[in-house]
Length: 372
Length: 134
Image (spheres, each protein chain N blue to C red):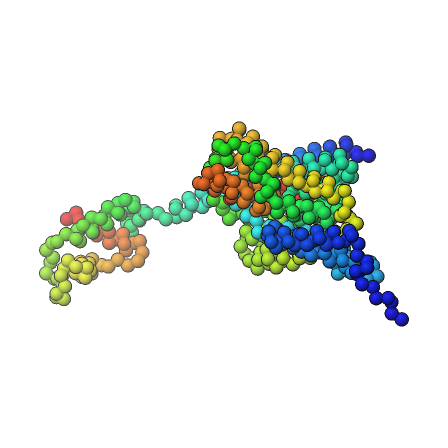
């Protein structure tokens, strides 16, 4: 005797219709506006698939009928949390630390820009979130998708969908969020500052740097090992020059495959019951504020460094400490050119950009070590 | 109820760790830069000292690079200068003595052609020197 054939139509709820509309909006933004398409397109598709009723796509492996995306979510994010560190391997293979090595003091700008994490952490606590939830919301201010996903998966897995969407959406909107803040905090004269060309960096330095950074940070913050370790490993693949296939695979095939699984899974985890709550709007607001505060503190730190330093730096590069690589560096380049057409700030801004990645991964390690 | 003590502890610890770690990395990078520069300087020095312009003759006499350059210039000037050649040297090939082939002829008959190696070159230079002083 067969069961009654049930279509999804009668099981569709208003909440699911709204989420399908949200997923469609993300797909539209990804395709039409080209806003972080590699992330928002699969997330949007995942939202649609995850909110269509009776698919059981997100059923965990322990269920009677495990779902495809439920298996990815369970093993990739919930139990083993392997996917974000693998993305960091690819990011490390694409990173170029030459700009940072050429001007090491820009590391401080990367550290200063992490202040946004702490303001939204405290803001989240004030608004009633628990400490683990506040840590995962705060880390959105690091403007680093894999770090946000990794931290949230460990500390507050129920927020993983909204935190990831917030992080990637604000990263895509960096060109809208940062310029007004930068203009308010800097004068026209400061924006015109031309920075001296960076010194050439030897191959030996490029090879030693990821090794030293990896050992040093992991000794101090052991829980940052999955992120920092994979990031520096990827960079070493690239800088050594002796494993081109590994470097290419990390940057291309591996990164692309993992992006597909991770983003679809995150999208599918955004069910209507989890997302359509007042908490979601609060998280989106806190995420936005952390981006803004991070931009402001990065710029202010650069201005403070100019007070003590003989060699002036253009304070706008402090905004690139918000580690949305390379979007925030491009924003700084555009603003720099507008102020002074002779100015070429992109390479200088990439220094604090990468420093921000290292800084946010370190903060995540501390959060996980203290709270996890 | 939020545990604000724990919250501030987290904030202060995280800020301290991040700034300490990144400041330490700045110092490490400066140290790396100095070490690599020192290593490159040492490599450049050892590379240049291996090539000496001094020439040692078979008799033990050492000629500096400047002396060798001066002698070579003098020889070149001497070879360029038109002069009477002894009859037994004149080639019957009909090539003008002042073209390159003529000069090679003279070199072959007047002097032994230098083989590769410092000793034969230095011997040739000494002979040329003696020729000049006549």
